[in-house]
Structures are given as C-alpha cells and as structure tokens.
Length: 444
Image (cartoon, rainbow, N blue to C red):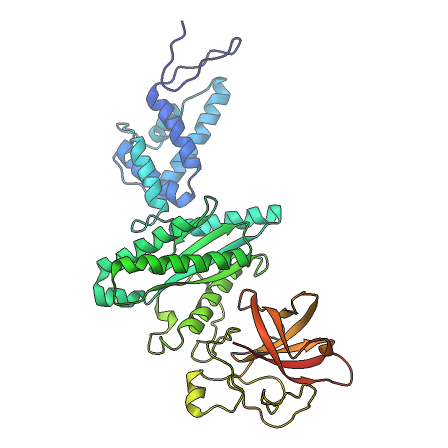
C-alpha cells in the first residue's frame, strides 16, 4: 500500500517513485508559489521576517532576496545532477549552511504569511488597496488594454473640505469620513474594478473597458451616494467627493499622462463647482502629495479660471460692472482680434464688428487642440471649437446659414467630458474665403 504524506500526490502507474516529502516541506512549496505572486518589495519584506525566525539573524531585504533566489537555483541544479526531485527545504538548508547562516529552522504560520501579504497591499484605515499597489495594477491594466485595443478609465477623487472636519470635529471623526468614503466606493464598483487610497484624502478608481461617459456617470453617482451617506454623521461641514476622469488611449498613451489629465480635470472642476464658496480656502497644492510626476507646473487657479460650458445663471451680454467682473474671477487675454459685442435683443448674425470687446468672461483659446462640437439634434454637422468661456463658445463653421438662431450642440473639449448645451448665435464673421467664425452664447 502506498502511504501518502503531507500534500504529495499518488504517482501514476509506470511513473518513477516520487519522494515522500513531510508536511513542512510541502508548506515550503506553497510558500514558493505564494512568493511568486508578490512584487520585489513585498517579497523582500516577508523573506526578511521569515529568515529572522529561521536563522535568528538580522538580514537586509536584499540579502534575503539573494538567498531565496539562490535556493531556487540550487534546487534546480541539485535535481538535474541527481536526476531526481530535490525538496526546497534541502536546497534552502544547503544555501544557508554555505553562507554560515543556518541555525534552528522554524517555519512561519500560513496565516501570518497571508496577513503580511494583506498589510503590504492595503491601507489599514479604509481597507482599500494602497498607493503602491495602484502603480502596479495601473501598469498591468494599461498593458492589457494595449494588447486587446480596449479602454481603461481612471477616476481620481478627493474629499472637499476634509481638513475642516479634522479641525472642527477631530481626527477620529475625520477617520470615519474616510471609512465612509471607502465603503461608498466599494458598493459602487463592479468586481472587475479597483479602488485605491492614494493619499490622505485622495482616492483612485481603475475601470477596465470603460469609456469617458460611463466613468463620468459613475463619478456623479458616487458623489450623490456619498453625500447621502454623510448625513448619518451629522457634521457641521458639508464634505463632497469630487472627481476627475481620464481614459486611455483618448487622453494619453502613457500612464503618467493619463494620471496628469485626470488630476487636472479634478482641480478644474473643483474650481468651477466651488470657486465662490472656497475663495478663502488654501490653494490645492498645500493639500499633500499628488500622483502627478514632476513636470511643468500648471498655472494656479487664481491666475487662470477654468472654463465651464454650463453657466450657473442666465447669460447676459451687457457690459459688466466691476463687482460682477470680480465675482467671475480674473480674465484671459483672448488671442482673436477684439470685437464689440452685439446685444442678444438685436440679433445681427452677419454683422462685422470692430473695436474693443467687453465680455462678461474672456475666452480660453482651443488652438492646438482637437476640440470640436457636434451641432443639431441629428448630429450630422460638426464645427471646430475656436475658444471657450463661461458665457459662450466660438465656432468655425462651413455652412452657418443651415443653422437656426438657437440650436443644440455637444461640445468635445480636452478639459471636460462631452457636454450637451443649447447655443444662441450672437454674431457671424464670414471671410471672403474659408470657413466662417460664429460666436454663440450659452442659454441657461
């Protein structure tokens, strides 16, 4: 009768006799398989603790990784030379003895191994994956998307006014807000999605096979669900979960570019949503480390307000007073030639204008971008977006006469997801040759 030992398998008829390894040696085989799933830092951290218990010596992570690699190679060498399988324990003892490091072997419990693996990969407060694992998983998903020509969406989120919670209610209550945000993220994701805590109050979501509209919709649903859940804490501070979306490959071919785009969109939308309420808040760069790698520093929000295609109040084209201009933030210098505005009550779509222009908010040039607009309900006509501002948009149109005075459009610009708006034609400039320039205002 064949006696089974540990986790060994019964050999098939005709196979050479397999060695009967004890249970602890079978555990080492399981340990080797588990270590293959860890990256180098986590593997080195575990092996350092493992060798400390087996040798009672303090070794560096680099030494531990070196001894383990030597063990794998030694087993392969001995098995080949002896023409029979050699256990990992035999190879490990040979390596440690050769290095004068072998003492009393004591194996680590499997539960301790799993706990160490979880601690190395997760954030202890929220239970979400940590920033180190975000970098690893993001690269894996990008490589998968490249191979299969798929999309990967990245959502970067942060807790707006989170610092006020710590200041007014204390850090324990701030920890509750973080845990509540993490629970909201977990409830909102598919099994194929990933959620990470990447900073103090910053989170990231990886969404394989997801486009920009789906990711933006998810971000809005998470924001609403979090605001509803926050009511249970009864705080005096209104905390929101803001988000910025970027999608591979539309917004970038490399991971750092996609991260930068999502980060920029987060802070642009924060400026639009909170520019009045947060006028006295500290600048965003004081909030802590960002995912964006070192590179050209973008202009701060106080120097260049982000454009929005959804004004919060009816658009007026009369010359603003000093107080209304201040409320809308500092202005840009438009690259186009200055023109005098035409009041909406006197539409002159083909009028040519000259002289200084006084808009309610200046425009941001879209030159050098792929910004465009899909015009009309049928979506058969498109136009290039020349510039964009809080009050309206400039379009380059081939056949403007085919459009009514008021029409719908979907704007596709680099700083925002696609947005449906209603436009009213304010003026039209038709050169002798080429496309016409049409200025439009947003209708609330």
